[in-house]
Every structure is written in C-alpha cells, then in structure tokens.
Amino acid sequence: MRGFVSFVMLTMLAGCVHHGATTPAHDIDRAALDARATQLMHDARVTGLGLAVIRDGRVVYLKGYGMRDVAQQLPMQADTVIYGASLTKAAFAYAVMGLVDEGKLAPDASIAGMLPKPLPSYEKYADLAGDERWRKLTPRILLNHTTGFANFRYLQPGKDYDPNGKLMFYFDPGTRFAYSGEGINLMQFVLEEGKGMDVATLMHDRLFTPFDMPRTSLTWRDDFSGNVAIGYDENGKALGHKQRGSVRAAGSMDTTLHDYANLAAAMVRGDGLSPAAYKAWLAPSIRIHSLQQFPTMGMPDTTDNDGIGLGYAWGVGRFESPEGPAFFKEGHDDGANNLMLCVVRSRNCVLLLSNSSNGESIFPAMVEAVLGKTCFPFYWNSYIPYDHPDWRKEPFAPCTRLP
Image (cartoon, rainbow, N blue to C red):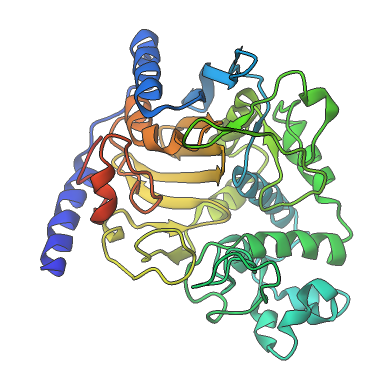
C-alpha cells in the first residue's frame, strides 16, 4: 500500500514539474499580499515577519509585519536585526565557492593536505583518533552535508542533549546526506587553521560589503541594539536575542531583511562567481532520500521526493520546480524561523524571516502567495501548516497537498 501511495504521489508530482503555471515576473498585488500575510500571522500567532520578494534578480518588495518587540510595541522593519540561524551556512558556502573559483581551494581534495597536522591532533577533533575516515573529508563533503557526522556532537542519535557527546562517523563520508553543522564548522576550522584565513573577514569582504549588507555580522555589534528582533516561542513567550561573540559558520549570523534579500538576489544572479563556478555551486552532488531533514540520523528512507530530484549542492538544497531548478536554505532556532527560496531561470525568490517559533507554520502559504506552485518539499522540511496539524502524521510528496 505504501508503495502504491508513493507511486500516485510521484505521478501527480511529475505533472506538476512539467506542466506548472508560469509565475508573473514583475506584477505584485501588494494589497493582497499584505492582507494574506497579516491574516496568516494572526491565525497562526506569528509575532513578527519580514518578507522580501525578488523578481528577475532584483529586490522589488521589502515589508516588515507584526512586532520585533512586543513589550515595547516596536514594529518589525526591513532594517531590523534578526537572527539568521542556518542561513549563515548558505552565505558561508557562497563565499567559499569564491575561493574555489580563484583556485585557492580544491573542492575535492582531502582536508589532510590543507592542515599542518592530522585533524585528530587538534583537541577539538581528538575524538576522531584511530578513525582514518577523516582523511576522506573534502570541502565539497563538508558543505553538502555528507560528512557522516551528527548535526552536532551533543545531538547524538537516540539520546537527549549531551554536552559531552563524542564526535564520530555514523557512515562513510560522501555516501549519503545527513545535515551537519559540525561539517560546516570544520570547513571554517580548515580555512582558519590550514589557510590562515579569518572567516569573518572573508564574509565581510566577499559578501557583506559588495552586496550592500551593512547590518549583517557573524558576531554581535553594539549598533544593532537600537533595532533588533526579540525571539518568541510557540506560546508568545519572549526569548530575548542572544549576543553571539564567536564566529560560527554554521549559524552565528545576525542580519536584516534588507541585507539578506540583497544577498539572495546576488546569489540568484550569480554575482561574484564565474559562470562555471556558479554552475558548480548549484550542481546537486548528493540525492536525498530521508523522509525528513531532522533528526539528522535515524530517519527512514523514502522515494517521495524523487519526482523533484531533491538533493544538496554547495551549501544549499536543490530541487526541480515547475519552472526548473530551484535552490533553498532554511534557518531554524527557538524564536527564529527563516527561509530563502529561489527559482534559477526566472531569478524569482522569496525570503521569509520570522522572530517566532510559529513562523514556519505559515511558510507554505506565504511561498505560494509569492511564487505560486513550486513543489517545494514542505514535509521534508517539517513545515506543517498551522491549520493542518494532522498533516504531520502522514508523509506526503511535494505538490500533492496545498495549504
């Protein structure tokens, strides 16, 4: 029965991919979009939301909705600093691809040749002593989430949070997808230890300055305090805004709607990269068959996403939309729900930044309102619509259900 259901879903999806309607290139019904966002936020109890619309590689709409700070009744704005969470990973990967483009980094070379001493010789990676599989790790493997590591060592499969968790391989590097912040942070370590680079400077010089991102940083800046989003949990409880003091390529970035929209537009245009490097950045190097993205380990395999060719490229997810290839990156934490989704050929994107743990429950409807039917893998991302909590109980393929 399960196989039959999957077959039906894939058949429906194939029709979506090949016969989808064309998204308008420029026209935006702003009043309708605002009304839709406002109603969804009210119904789903979303505190604040930033929406950016990109058409043909240009930012054409920026709008803040709701509150950045409920206690002080301060509105969400386009220049409000908000925690980017794992959107940091996509930005970092784009900057690293620039190094590949310039011949400063070999994408498929072992990190063993980039470090001055074996990886397990460093205290942070001593857990890997005796397991030579670390030598199989390459920049590509670190950035496409095929390291074999858990998301973070303290989030071990089948266990609760363990601050003393051991870093280990759960499968051979490069053989399957399993989302891992450990891999991204190891890429940062390789650049800093092996190449003598400062990642904060790398990001500032390659992204934040050329793409007009003045209020984006990998660490907290005091000038952010005048306009910053407070995070809120599912019940509307204030969680504050953590002032991060350490650079972490896997997720320490503060940004704004204005700034990250400029980066998304640059990414969909391919700015800063040669055509060959841009093609390589977007090329999916691993297919994804896990039922959902999280937890990293232990999810059963499925064919539900085969119809859209779900895979991972250089720091971003990839799939086939009705209008051709699309890429995406999410950012998730308590009080921070974010999504960037871009269609390559039309160069149309939507960016959603929310300071509410309920934000993801309206993302399916907001994506459809901006881009139309995309076949984005909402279930795989655990984006369950607030008004369809029952959808959490039964897996479904993209485009077989709409909000």
